[in-house]
Length: 110
Image (cartoon, rainbow, N blue to C red; front, side, top):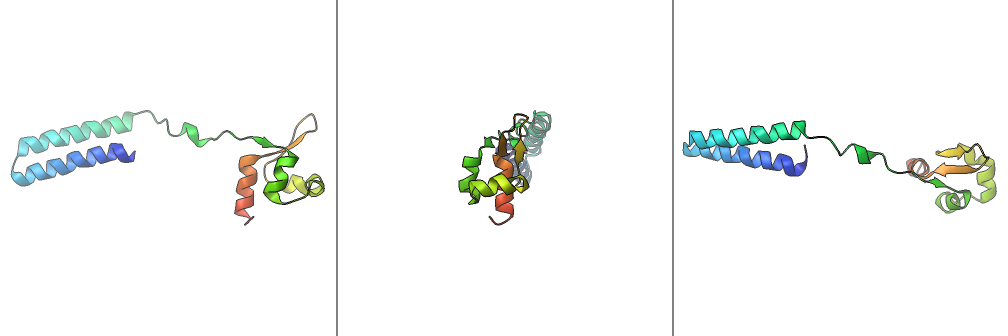
């Protein structure tokens, strides 16, 4: 549930409780029906939030990896295949996927 959508449901439920405390049974039933409809809308609403979870990743050249890792170009040519995100293309070009490389650097303390 989204924070704003669930908040609207909670407001309706609070209004239903307040109506019950005042003895307004039909008003409470109305608030409960509105909150039930909003819950159904939340359940049936398409989940668009899952699509942006996969970020666009970009390949980094050896020159772009040097400042991120602190390794020299020579060290990357020799040992770079051990870094996360390493990719050797069919034409022989070597790159690293930025997201994987940064996650590996942050995970290893850096």
